Length: 270
Length: 270
DNA sequence: TCTTGACTCTCCCCCTGCTGGAGGCCCCAC
DNA sequence: GTGGGGCCTCCAGCAGGGGGAGAGTCAAGA
Image (cartoon, rainbow over all chains, first blue to last red; front, top):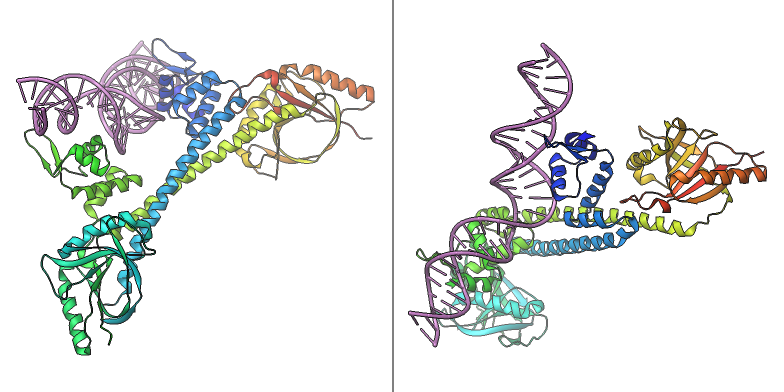
């Protein structure tokens, strides 16, 4: 007979655990001194303890171990229960893998945003824009209203989105509260939704400027780009565009000083 | 402003959970009525709630979420912490895979024991035994001592085990308490351990008998096989062997009436 | 025989991230 | 003013133990 401390060394189970297994009734001491309450174990109980430890190592809950130990007598009966436990663990693995996949997706998105921030220059450039299919909503309102449109639009056409959010401005001037705005996304194919309208947005020659900073400070960017048009003797075509390369992040508002917005002014062809 | 019930619908988080997040200080209501204690939330808090739900979905503990939400303002800072979380999850996956591997191993063992029970005939046979590498411990004691040796041996050479547990008897007679016994396993390569000795066990011609039943009833088996040797004019070589095809199971003692033991008596070559 | 120090006992709280329930207010509509 | 549903706080419980207090026990040495 061993005291609980000795038995703990034999079985490599903590004393607390042995007492807990006693309370749970899955591993009873072989003798309990009635006066002192001391637990004593026979060496033969070590086998049962080892079986319990083995089953716990396979993530079997105590309650299930109790049933197994009381109702089963042969290994052959264990096969089914082992395999069903295996499946439970397998499905837990599946859940974890899903989590990791979504972490990967978010990390990729964050990184691509960062890379874009490095990639672009802040000088005025001339570009040839490609034709694209554009799904957007046209409304009259404030410039700050576009954010909300992106949220709802992204939910309804999510999987067809083929580029960064954009807005088109159909006024040739700055307007306070009733600007004529079209906000949406480039899409990979024409989609039909109740809210959005799909159309082909023609490309062509354009002058562009990358702006880093909060949206309220876009003004000087427009000043600079319009000055450029003037010196080159080019004239602006409508609608003008803004492409939001980096805005509020997936998790947080982010730092508006790092927002990255591309102003695109189409040039009238002669 | 929404009541907690409305906000619960918006965020798809149970009311109880919202109250818990309030207690934990990671999602405070935007206003609390001082008289009634009612919590009220602004719609803008839904974004924070979504972030919390997302992080919880990635298994981040509440305490970590609290730190993240209070100290981080940009997505870029999240990359490291997301990747470290990814690693934690990956290692949990690893642990689960290990568990499943050991379940597989045990299921295989149980099944092979079952199959052996069907496969073997119970008559006396003559066989040619192959040479094998044998890792065992030689000691003097009782026949019933071999069980303990298998347990400790299996733990130390576990992955190299290449066959059923065996014992070799170096006495030419039955001995009560000081039999000269060697107990161990066939192994796939020579292994070096403090307890066990490895050697090549030479094969050769042998007479064998499969015995079903408890170890105490092996006696008649020996009687039968020795009588067979005599009638054939063969003489016994040492050590004799017992191969334990099926004994006490991984989990349970099993039914001793189903134990399956093969007696192998090597035959002296002229 | 006494003392000392190591063990052991029971009992209670703590961990995580909620969930359920009891008992009691509060709000709104009819 | 009344009913019914919503909301409040507080308490308990889950799984599998871990940590620690305060008290009793055991065995060896002086």
